[in-house]
Image 1 (tube, rainbow, N blue to C red):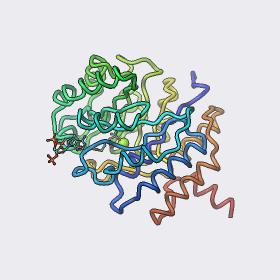
Image 2: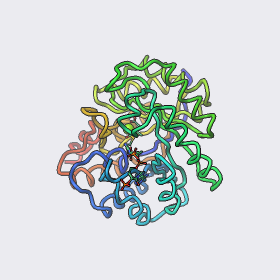
Image 3: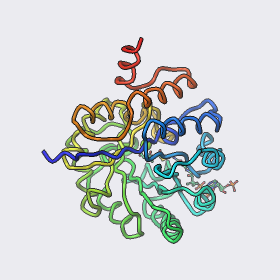
Length: 301
Ligand code: HMG
Ligand code: MG
């Protein structure tokens, strides 16, 4: 098996994780979470979204959160941007990378960003051009790459199409996202292979929600293909407000534990990561949604 020797993780907890929380989370808590993640060795963090506060109220403090982080030169900070309005806000906060977010499913595109897949690409094109001109990197998320809460199973050809459209407008790398955490390993490999028709192995990442408990198996299946970039969420936080019933991303703690066991380097200190997960979980008034974190916490006791 051609497993990668090193894996790059992007923790999306502050963004994908917290966007779904009903209770207000103060900017100071979000900032502290980001600080703890970088202290644990995360070198890529998806911090927030410059989206409409009417659609996602929890991300309304995007500028404050970005302004409050003590930046490290070794860490890349990314933010979601759906349109030029979002870019205008994002650029002032100097992200290292922006994420335009589209979908392989038409109905999800409508529910999430209020436009068709074709319209979304038209909206993203000037955003991508502006970001590239400003030397800000651009990633593209492909939601519902395997399954959609409104359309059911999604064909890999849809992923291939969106990957091609994103490539054509200058998106530099893509996330293959199982938004509702319903996919199984073979399906995951087919979706990743579809994106790999237009992007190289270094440019495709896996973004797996864990609703059906398949995300670690899907991560392993992606590693088998040589994919070495993944998004995960500390304490398993997360979910998309426009994908009802879908739970959080695979927990970063669980992925790091898996990778350590496989002898794959991540640069992450698992104990400090568990502390970061405990910090945010305590604020939210619940236990970390990570089996590895719970096991390590029990062992400490
Ligand atoms: P719209 O209503 O079609 O847009 O929303 P609009 O251009 O007609 O604007 C409506 C209002 O929003 C206007 O304000 C705009 O100014 C304002 P009003 O005149 O009514 O007062 N507005 C904005 N405000 C702040 N920032 C902006 C912005 N744009 C417009 N950027 C829009 C279209 C895309 C804005 C909306 O649908 C939206 O914000 N959607 C956000 C959806 C979202 O954040 N979803 C969660 C993230 S995606 C995800 O979780 C999936 C992922 O994790 C991968 C996976 O798991 O699948 C990435
Ligand atoms: Mg997500």
